[in-house]
Picture: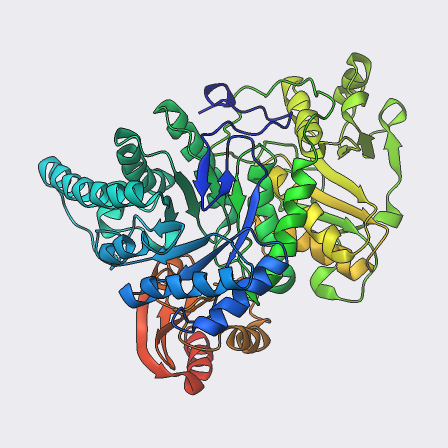
Length: 576
């Protein structure tokens, strides 16, 4: 599918048009500001602890708060939590997070402002990775059963004036969807659309939609596909964005900024959560800064450009280029950076060694700096005449993503196959801000397949810190793997152990295992599914008990928590 078949402007920022959804007085979509939210990790029956955590989230700027509702008693207790919040002057909308039990969603309509249901386990049973051969008639019967149950729930929501989130997680697709569509973006989108079609047919408008996965590239391209399918079927519900199981610290922030930023850059997204394996209130400043950075592009000077023929917005392939040494061709994207003693983030080229030439005076075998304004007819002909050059694209436009995209699309449209390194200079107050902005700007260019390297410059941060950000962006997009990847959930009321402390200990023990993906999951909602994307998994099974996975296979169940990390390390060692 080419860009001509989707209503998106790759080069100019505009918000996607949606219907308006009212969640407890907070308006989402239809041009309203992008709302930021978080989720408690307290037990929902811990009324006082939940109230205190909600207040911390709201005081940081959170505009909605989600809580786990494993059963009816948790759903009912949302009423007590809301009552105490109101008594203390907090009227933030509360969202009930429901899995595995449709009747709990029914109960939650009386106490929550919005109810999240997961299509993977709303009426389907929990995912077991079993293939089921359905006839068309049998599959139609399953959809009829889904419709009858979901319509009853929607009627309750209408009566109570409550909103719904249809929240698909790649890690918890049902066996029914997997059996018919496979583990594919089409399957993820169809899992969502089954529910959205019912909402449309029932004229239920207060719906927010999300598709989440721990793989940032898949998250971005699957949401792009969903937006197109929704438009084709006349559906314009607002979108909730998030990269699930993003992890913590620098990696969690970069991963979230890459995935969320890539969609916000195209005007997609009306509310979001940055999922960090940290205290929930830590998520809010990250989310707010990311939203402000992208949405400030509104009204920017227009960028005139044309997408190149064959560019696939939903399933982008890396642009074909001529290799120049280790740059371009089949080589992994490179990093240009500063001198550092840390070999894990050693740049492929030192910026101080590069003589960056102007395009009009460039020689063969040079690094040549270009901007969109440089691509005149004369300069394009000059670039075509050069041999073995690496182009270094930069932008100071208010919409740098749009302008850097325009540079590469113009090159392809003019038959130029030289590799392109993306250069961005930042003047920020902190490394934390630099990390978010660089990830949001450059991650989408890697996902689009149009970057052969990164060159970051900044007024803040050491060479090690700046190089680390560049390598982190490459890792987050899986364009270049240079370290261990941790797929770690943020934790919630379902978490069965000390997730943050355990993640820190696992990282300390496994950081040398470069290239491995290790999942650290609080419970079974997404645990087994996300293990399919990880080499090894550590999943909460019961209070103080952990199960270990090798990819999809559970290899040891209900291990005492105090023994589980050692057994995980032994499992990895035995597989070498």
